[in-house]
Length: 540
Image 1 (cartoon, rainbow, N blue to C red):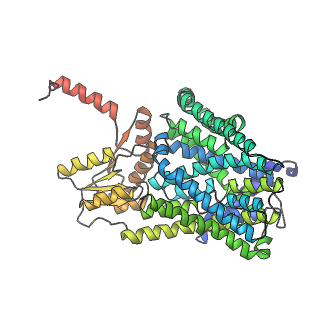
Image 2 (image 1 turned 180 degrees about the vertical axis):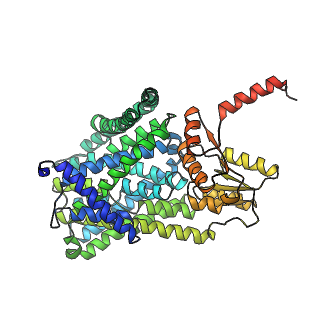
Image 3 (image 1 turned 60 degrees about the vertical axis):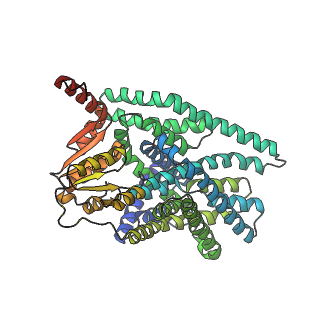
């Protein structure tokens, strides 16, 4: 009987319940996440009926975290990570400090010891990887500047949690000394640094090479297996050998794999599993919550939620604005971080095992996590409305605008292309997800749309129905492919030009709908041949 197979039962019942309640939530105009959480509550140990295996569900959800962070790494380069360090590093540290202080104050007000209050505050200071990434991906914000800042912020929090998980057991030991704590911290930093160095020096060469050899073998299932083996293998190896969190190890694996021309195929192959295990994450969260805390300590629960949503959100918004970023960017970052999740659960479980935290604190964190996860999509709705109100909504083209070219991405390539088209008398509409670039274009008297070009509404606002061509100048082939697919679906006959970096990009972007893919090295070589053949190589 299946009661001898708890893994199968937990996955089967959990996914079925999540599907039914998630679909019901969607029909009720709520986020499906609400349904997934309700499914976990329904099969958890605190409600009647079937009870799933909480430990197994938690381990399965950890796979979801690994796959999600691996997928983020596939979109994120080392250069992009370094580009946001000046805001992500001080911002994350400052926000965690303030949130920990607020949580500590709440814990002391509830009559807990200083140690318990500090650990409680620390658990409230770190955001959930899964919740943030799902929110950013659903709104096509992951590849924006705000998305990069939020992810960079999350990585700093992740590193801080790695240190916290090392230090807390030492501090909980009777007779712990400052020297012992400093020694553990130093050793942890050495291990994390060693892992990063190995990934940068060895991984950037070995992993893309290995994936290319597997692709040459011609087996699709073997390629998919290789992708999963790299993501999970690096994550587990990093945790076992270097003490790095599974999520951080998977993120580095994805960033290293991004250097391969096969990164877009790897992302596509791992997407279904990422989605399925992300659902199990929310189900596992629901299983952990004891709903009696809502009736027994309602005021304490409200105060805890306020620290998570208002305290963390306001601090993040103020910090991003203080660093001279736009209001809309600050709102996106604040909404992304105004929730808690997996690391918070790990911390409170550790605190309970060490007899530092009372059971009430654990219940408050779990219940507050559920509420913050439910509220988080609503925060993004508020952010979107506030952004539209400030900019007066996206400015659609006039009815007379026809035969124009839509330039998606206004970086170095897009800016040069747009200028060349205008010089030739062609009307241009720029689409970019960076508010500063869009404002600069508008201030110069030209049309620009703020948003991600992979969204139907953005390209519609840019007038794709009457455009002669779409020029996709974004450097990331994954994002470019999504834009090409959306453009082709909206305008089957429009010419779509995209940029790529090699043969694999040409194949991928053409499959997604691009009419032609321009590769820098190829075009340069062709131009040199043409100039030499025509006798024009001498110049003027």
